[in-house]
Every structure is written in structure tokens, then in C-alpha cells.
Image (cartoon, rainbow, N blue to C red; front, top):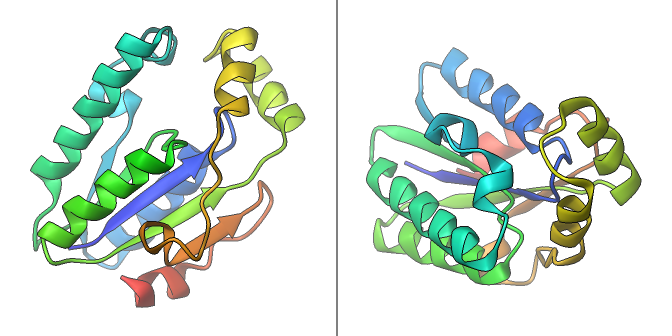
Length: 166
């Protein structure tokens, strides 16, 4: 079954959208796997604190996605996915499994991410700004970023469009 790749800056609202999408598909009687730092029981500050830890974390996420892609589930990968190479690797996994995917880009300003982080305290401010500055925005014309749905923090989710594309 399909893969939904959440993409966006730290504290942009990806998890809020991902859990709503998860509920939508579970209400339609699909089995949904949500893969994120919380489900893997890792601290975001730890897995993004340096390039070595971040690379290990991305490898772990990719491994979890690979284990969970099946013909009986929908998998939502709810991490930063801010590097186009990471999204491309996920696209290749999907192609090898002969299934579909979509990218949901949660486009949020740095100020809003900082405001959300003030409430959650998930990231050190310096780390959040650094991760945000490294964001490689998805581009609809890239095959690994297509189909793509761009959502802003207050948008409603186009559930039916996502369902049709999967």
C-alpha cells in the first residue's frame, strides 16, 4: 500500500496533519503505520544534534519504512524529510515495492515554527533555525516529490485528493 511522506521544517505542524490523516484512513478501515520520532522513542534533540546522529536517524527511519511497506497498510513517515535525497530514497523504496506515494509539504514560516517550539520545547532554538535553513523544499516537477500537496498551518486537509492519489 502507499507511502505518505510528510515534509517540512521542525515544529511546522507535520505531526498534527499526520495524525489527522492517520485517523481519516483508520476510519475508512485501513491499517495505518505512523513512523516518527515518537513512535521510535527517540528524542529529536538527540537525533539531530550532529551530522553522524542525523545520518543514523535517517537510516533508521528508512529501515522502518522498508519494514512497514506492505500491500495491507498505509505508511506515513512523519519526520523532517527536508533533504531531497532522503525523499528520493523513499521514492525508490516505493517503486521497488510497486506501490504509490505522495508528499505532503507543510509550509510554515520560521517565526511560526519558533512559536510552536516555544510551546513544545522539542528543539534548541539554534538547532531549529539550523534545520530550517537547510530545508530543500519539494518541487512538484521532481518525480519523487509528485504528487505533492502543500499545506499551510491553518489549511484543511484535502483527504479525498490524497486518497485518490494513493
